[in-house]
Length: 217
Ligand SMILES: [Mg+2]
Image (cartoon, rainbow, N blue to C red; front, side, top):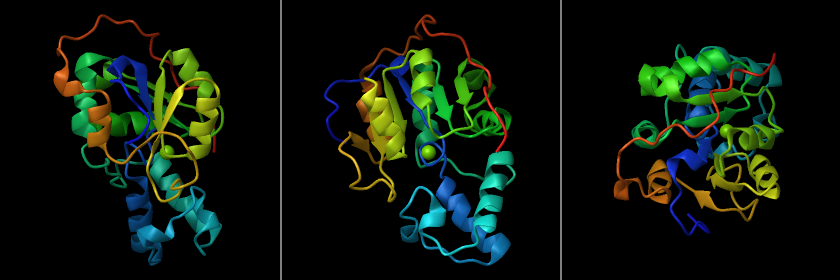
């Protein structure tokens, strides 16, 4: 990790979901193989917009992502290594905050709830915006100061508005920005120095849960 010099308190930070909390590319590669007999190596995915780096019919790409948007549990979307354990630790200190470009809130809420449990998700704030652009508006409304995302364009936009954006390292953002980075959930845990903190929950100090905002694909 780079450039973050002080511990972040858990109520100050929010997370993107796909390719940060969820190992969406593992699921994409697996479904391409299982459903379409298309073999993809992880190192082939060098662009966030995978159509730009894979010679695959865009309709097939869309159909795989649609499955993962509509039914992440049924399609066995996995969490990133250590994500669940670290998020559960965060939840001891403050409600979790997620902002995703996904258009539908319920499928990904149910996926998070299956991983983290109903108690943690009853407190969590989850915005499904239906757009890759404009996360900054939600981040400001949610009152957080740090956000972790794998899309470097999103991080640059957030940073330009005075929020500390941290890029979760993935092949499609490597060497494309000058922002702070993390490469694992262990690094995220270290950023927040959770091991050094009193585990007494904070009184609620954040705006209430924001219900789904948008839209259709
Ligand atoms: Mg993402």
